[in-house]
Length: 179
Image (tube, rainbow, N blue to C red):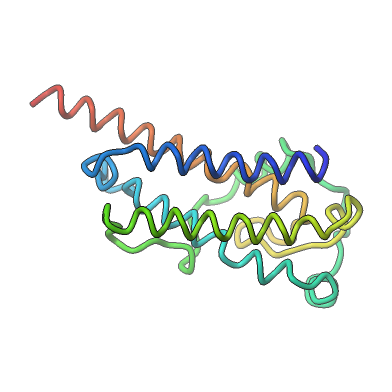
C-alpha cells in the first residue's frame, strides 16, 4: 500500500469509527457488557493511542537517533495483524481510558481525535516511501515497527474497537428485548 493510500485509510477508518460512536444514543454510549469497555471508553482509548504521534513524527532525525532503522524485512499488512493478534492485546496503562466516559465528554473527545488526525496527516506527508519502510517507532506490544507497519496497525485499530462496540450494542439490544 502506498504512503498516500495508507494515510487515507488511517484517517477514513478513524472517521468511520468516530461516526459510528457519534450516532450512539446516551444509553448505548455508556453501556458496558461483561465488564468490557463502554463505547465512550473505546473512544477515549482511541484518542490516547494517537496523541503521541504528532510529537513522535515531528523529527525524522530524532526518530533515527532514538529508534534507528529496521533490521528485518518490512512486514505487510497481514503480517502486522498476524503478529498483533499473537500479543496479549492488552492496552498499556498510559492508553487506558477512565473508568467512566460520559456522553457530555463525547463531542470534546471526537474534536480532539479529529485535531490529532489532522496533525498526524500533516506530519506523515513529510515522509518519503523509503522513510516509511526504514525508520522505526516503538510499539508497546510489538516492539520496533517501521512507520508503515505502525500505521498499518493504527489504520486497523479503530475498526478493531468498532467491532467490539458493535458486539456490545448487539447485546444491549438483546437485553432491551428481554425486558
